[in-house]
Length: 429
Image (cartoon, rainbow, N blue to C red; front, side, top):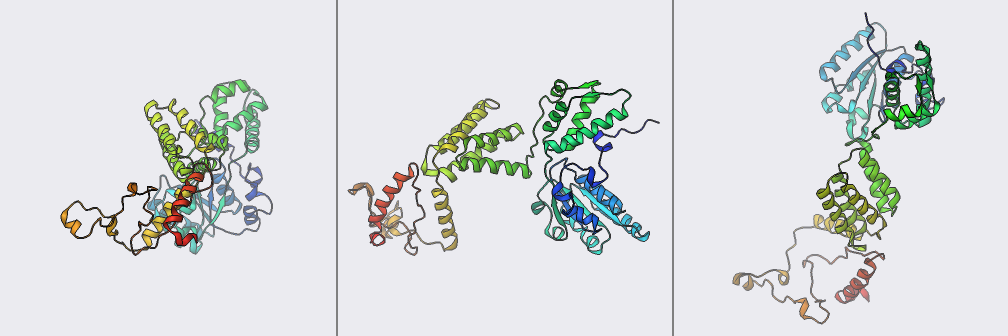
């Protein structure tokens, strides 16, 4: 009978902590998980990290080290029925005097009620719960469950970590093969870099290369397999929000080179360019504002150009705008003024519009005083009616907009100070 196929990554899965590549901040002597196992302290936990960083492997090692029965389930395929079946199995283990480790992969995919089903059994110690997730537990795991778990963060593996795993794979392949395969160390490093921090991806790529029947693994062979490899990118998860945060902050920090890098990372990973266009418009108003009023139309023009050209030609227009936004003078005065004004509006009642600012399109409204005593600014010497109050009578005037001393806002501030000194002479005394 033909033996069932097992991927190389599964066949080479480590069975001890000292076989794992990377994660030394958790696994090295004296570090959290190493101490738990050494002292045999049962602790339910969440393993949070990118794909291919060892979450499943670590759960298996913990179960094996604790001499516990391992029950594995995936939140993608399972539900309450599977949770209940796991509870029954764990109770049977307890009757036999055995420990149980319940491993739930992609635990963030369970809804609140499904996550709540674990609570009484974690409390009673029926099983040691280990959940694995690629998403931020703060947002995806309900607080009742999260409060009972220790969160351990797994990091993307370095190229050197992945090279260790690939070297072990190469040794194993040559041991299992009837004829030895010549493997260039530079080719292994090439695979390690292409894996983008994911050991499973590296081993799958390695297996793909070997499946082509090569007798020698060199850089040229690897390059053929790596054609059109895409960097890791999560369209809805933490990596997505981390990268757009990096792009925005590099624009704000006037670093066009780093901003362009993050833009290219997101485009290369498959991000929707229109999303980036929307964010550029936000950057133009939030971080530049009137320091350079051309920033907003530049962002909108890039958006329009992308819509007209599509991909990939339109991406150049977006890159053009991102660089412009990054080098433009910065001011958050408009953003701060808007937030302050909105906070005041929401904290006070609905004050009436003063009569002199009301429109009077009908005789009745005129008779009620609408528009009375209104001063038409253009008829006055400076083009400004300094004595005319713009706020409601019940609302004290507030200076929301405080221009920065950068870019065009430097001149705007000078003009505004001149007007305010005449409109509120008591403030300038």
